Amino acid sequence: MIKLLSVAIVAALFLESHQWIPIGPTDPEDPVCWTDWFDRDNPSGSGDWELLKDLKKEIHGNICEYPLHIKVVTTDTMTPAISTGQTFYTFHPTQGFVCRNKDQSKDMCRDYKVSFLCPCRLVEP
View 1 (cartoon, rainbow, N blue to C red):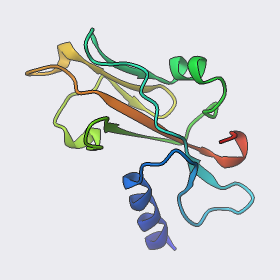
View 2: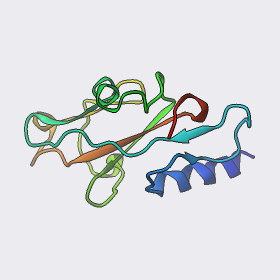
View 3: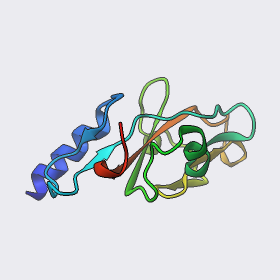
């Protein structure tokens, strides 16, 4: 079952969708799903700020109160943030994601988008 869940999680990480995506075998009474992708900021100022509190204000309830996981990818190539070699200030499911330009050794932050893992029953697609 762990192997099946791992395969489901890996598959979900590479899917881009505008739907809720169940990630595999979960408790049928409380399944978990990925949200849509959110990109509210561009890295042109001090960095790319995709904070959960800001996203919740702009989205009005489409993200659960306490996400279980966060995935972050570049907006242009869907490259996972952890594969870019950049340094991140915040990368946490209940806080969101921040890449500050001043923390990079060269260039500036790439443009990122985020998705959160939430109990499906708490949020309407």
